[in-house]
Length: 193
Image (tube, rainbow, N blue to C red; front, top):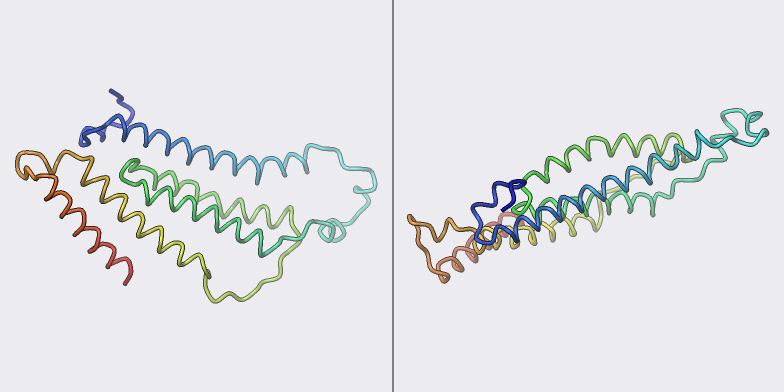
């Protein structure tokens, strides 16, 4: 029995929930570490630690900035959104398995804007500001993930926890299924409003 995740005593198959929590923590942690290394450390190391050719020292700051690579607002912005959407999916869909995943996401999202600003200001040509009406198709994806999160977390609580079968309630599987369906539709309706 693992003591790493003590909240799993509420669940019937604590080994399954414990394994899911460990895998989710590994996924989130690996994504954060790989993103930090590839987006911040490697470009910084390439710029600061490698000796530039002698003609680079003769260029003024304006010439150096002009020769930076252009930030592709279509691909770069979509990659930034995709990173946040994947993290949102991990946090909301599996919140019942790893309750402190929102804290991990909060810490990551504290540093993410600073890393993006550093990348935009140091390694890229200044992008031209463009007007956007919203976040586009990403809004529908977020709503879909929210509905999926309701289904998965409700199923996790109803079917793997022991409190519905404990002494005060002593519910059969039919009553548990009815609670699952009712809660799912009520919460789904609230999300769609």
